[in-house]
Length: 111
Image (cartoon, rainbow, N blue to C red; front, top):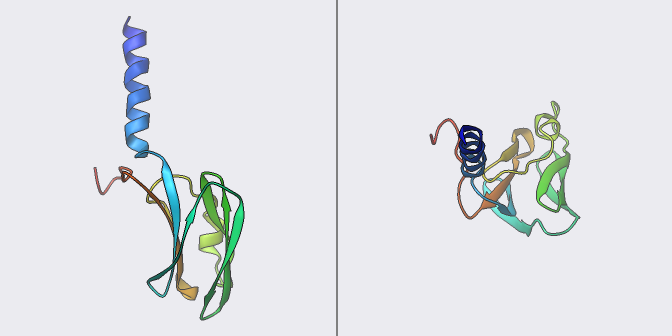
């Protein structure tokens, strides 16, 4: 009985901590929204910035920065984003990718 209760608590905690399902990818350039893409099919989206073109790859339920002309590639190295409010920022090229859901995910700041 104790094992069942513990496993139920862990399952509920993980579902609540995630913040629900991701609905769309929000792409910004220079702080302005340039695209809102559903995460239901594979696609790529090119975004022009001051250094060149940033390529964003979408797969069902996730997204990532595939390539960016920035020197350090931090946003590319971040990899796949799959949780609500996850964000990758390509600061030198002024491009960002954020995943949005119906409910925000909890993090250390919102907790």
